[in-house]
Amino acid sequence: MQTVDVGELAVSAYRTVAPDWIIDALGTVAERLRGARVLHLSATPYGGGVSELLRSAIPLYRDLGVHATWKIISGEPAFFAATKKLHNALQGAPSPLTPAERAVYEETARRNAAELTEDGLRDWDFVFVHDPQPAAIRSVVDRTRAKWVWRCHIDTSEPQPEAWDYVAKFVDGYDATVFTLAAFVPRSLPAERADIIPPAIDPLSPKNLSLDDRTAHAVLNWIGIDPDRPLITQVSRFDPWKDPLGVIEAYRLVRDEVPGLQLALVGSMALDDPEAWEVYRAITDASRADPEVHVFTNLTGVGNVEVNAFQRTSKAMVQKSIREGFGLVVSEALWKNTPVVAGRAGGIPLQVADGSGGVLVDSPEECARELSALLADHARAAALGASGHQRVRRHFLIPRLVLDELTLLDGLAHGDPPGSLMTRHGTRDPVCGLSLVPGDASFTADRDGVRHRFCSAGCRDDFLATARKGRS
Ligand code: UDP
Image (cartoon, rainbow, N blue to C red; front, side, top):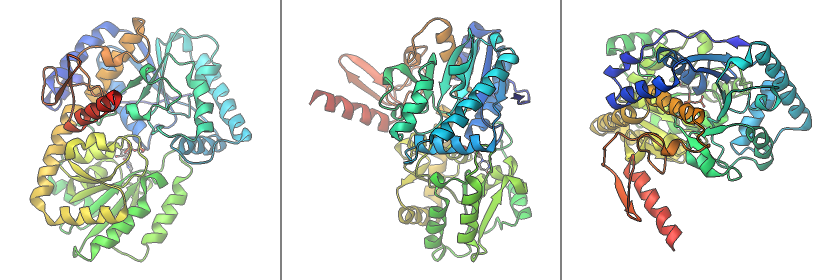
């Protein structure tokens, strides 16, 4: 099994960018876990949000004295074709796995479990399994003293029922399950047994670190973008759920109103995503006739620094997802003070709560209208970008994610039942599960003599609406 070589990071470096209370709390919880051994298992070392997270989280665990390792499961193309289908079905697509695809999935799990056992599975105190691809491994390992956590990054709020029942029988054997949003916990899983941890971005990674305009413009110029003309960009895997064709449709509606407008579609090809080439072909077919639509991939050298330059230089970023686990790209853009026009899907509304940072849309037409409005109003675009930056700083930077994960592991080590994260250490928003700045009372509501605190007016209003419904 491949171990991913990650670099070194120092938690102390994040003091300059992340809230102090998070850095302080990290030190405290890590003290209790010092020397613990944590294995993270995922399906691909590059492409997509999970690899982004692990690439930064693993070195931070290590800097805190926790022995963390990231390994990649192996599988044949037939396995990845099956798991992509399973991924889609868990997000609501109508086709569950066939018996033959289940056989490939389970056989691959057995092979990976055997490799893991050979590599010394008994050494681990905790195993974090990311997403459905490696989920079945837990059910076929022989002996393990580790606590196992299944970390689901996708929107499983309305899964195809057969697909979820299939995965649920593997998930049953885990000590804890973690979802990005409470709304993603499938109905058959008791909501109070699930833990909620939204993802986060690394503000110090090459993708997000500060880049001056001159350098950003030079990078874009070099790959054929004119930084002096208006630019809108979507950065995402080539995946139908990200609706790249909808972005092209929206761009076509906007281009007549904005002279010189350019659209960039920046997409990556991940190891575990065989569907990407089909989507790539559909995009290039749809955009061939328009020289102002530019399509880039990681395979032609558009990497982290280029994505950074796109997210800084674009007048607005688009993320027109129809289904979305979280959409790290939204926080990445907001961190750079760039406003987003994004699909009302999955974890995106949590990032732009109360309208900070962006506008939510439900169709290409609405996307086009909002883009036109933003491109015409620089002051509003700047104000949105600034409010988005503040929200990301408070809630969506990587030290907060590591704090939540270590707090979860600390709870498991002390025998807490699954779903206890909400009540451990500090205060969390009871609606979205975000950890809150100690003492911050910006959004509160009193119910049955208890004062609840929230990350946003949106979460407070949802809480009050649910309470009213409960009473009526
Ligand atoms: N990404 C990238 N290059 C690309 C496309 C995507 O570096 O061409 C990165 C993007 O910046 C983000 C991650 O891949 O960090 C995608 O994460 P997100 O949560 O937005 O979506 P996912 O792919 O996990 O569904």
